[in-house]
Amino acid sequence: MLVRNATLPDGRVRDVRIEGERIEAVGTGLESGSEVVDAADRLLLPGAVDAHVHFREPGAPHKETWRTGSRSAAAGGVTTVVDQPNTDPPTTTGAAYDQKELCARHSLVDYGINGGVTPDWDPETLFDRPLFALGEVFLADSTGEMGIDGDLFEDAVHRASEAGVPVTVHAEDATLFDEHARDRAGEGTGREANADAWSAYRAAEAEIAAVERAVEIGVGAGARLHIAHTSTPEAVDIVADAPDTVTCEVSPHHCLLSRDDLADLGTLGRMNPPLRSERRREALYDRVVRGRVDMLATDHAPHTREEKDATLLSAPSGVPGVETLVPLLLAETLSGPLTVERVRDLTAANPASTFDLPRKGRIEAGMDADLALYDLDRVRPIRGNRLHSKCGWTPFEGRTGVFPEWTLRRGERVYDGTMDTFGSANGENVRSA
Image (cartoon, rainbow, N blue to C red; front, side, top):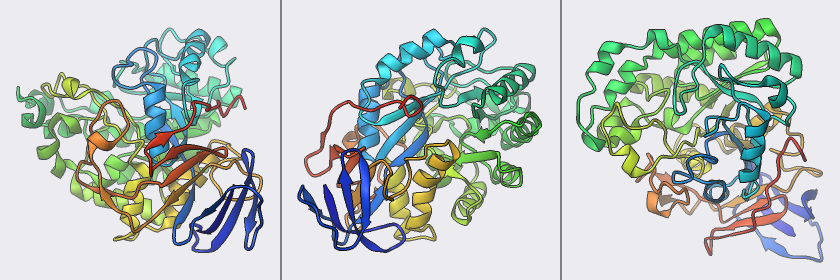
C-alpha cells in the first residue's frame, strides 16, 4: 500500500509506503505498484498503544471479550492493548497466563498481558511467561478484590526488578478512605444515586499518599515503576519529579470529567480512583498539555448497564474507554491547547518507548505499519449504541470525537470506518513476537 499526501502529526505532508507488515519508506513522490490511498487533507497517526485495558476474559465474557474489546480498540485507532490481571482466574500464575493468552488469540489488535500479585501468586511460573509488566498491582481493592498489603507489594517490586519486568501500580491507600462519606451513599440507584459520595470516600489524599510510598519503594528497588490512572495533579507531580524510571498515565475520564458530571452519570461514573473536583481536573489537564504526564491510557473497564443500575455501594467500578481515547483527544485539539503532536506522544510514542516496543508508536521506515487515518473536519457526537464494546454505553455520551476512516495493524486493515467492517483476528503478543 502507498498512502499518498498524508498529513503527519508535525504538519508535514508525506507519502508512506507499506511493504507487508512494516513501513518501508516515508517521503515525497514515492512510487508503488500496489494499492494507492489518497490521504490528502487527512491526518495520519501511528496506531495508539493503550497500556491499560480490562477485556474481562476469562471469567466475565458477558461484559467484554477479546473479540469485542479489540474491535472497539481498532474502531478507535488503537492497535496495541495491554490487559490487566484481575480476571477470573486472576493472572497470578503461569497456568492462568496461558489460559488468558488462549482468549487473547481472538484479538484483532496486538496485545500484552500483565501478571498480577495476590497472597497466593506464583512468581516462579509467572515470571517464566512473556509478561508485559507485573501489575496492575492493587494497593487497594477494586474489581476482582486483588488488594495487597505493603510487605507483599515491596517483595513483588523487588522480584520484578530482578526479573527485569516493569511494575504497574494501582495506588490508593485504603487506610485513608473516608468511611463517613461512604455511609452517606444512600439507597438511590443508577442516575438517582449519590455518586459523589464515592469520590468523597476514596479521597484524593489516599492516592497521593500511596503514590508517594510506591515511588519510594520502586526507586529503592531499582524497578521500572508505572503509576496507573493517576487522577490528581499532586500525584502527577510526585512522579514527574521522580527519577526517569518512574512514569505515570492519566485516563481520559479523569482528564475530561469531574465530580460536577456525577449528577448526570450516577453509578455509571463510579470508578477507582474516582472522579475528582473540577479544580483538580483542570490542573490535571494542564499537566497533560504541558508534558508532565507520560501517557494517556483508558483503564477500559466495561460492565453491563444492568450491573451499573444499582445502588452506589453495590454497583461495580469502571467505565469503557478504549474506542474513544483518540477521538476525544483529537476533538480537544480543535478547540483547546492540546496539539496533535502531543496526542501522538501521549497515545503512541511515549507508551511504546516506556514499555520497550521498538517497532511501535512512530511513523518511520522500519516500524510496524500500525496506522490510523482521520479527517479532522468530520466531528461527530459520541453515542454508546454506535460503539463496539459489548457493554453498549459510554460516560462520554453526547461529547464529540473524531473517529478513524480506517485503522491498519501491521499493514492489515483491521477497521474500515466507511463500511464499519473489521479484519481478521490476527493480533500477536508483543512480548512473544
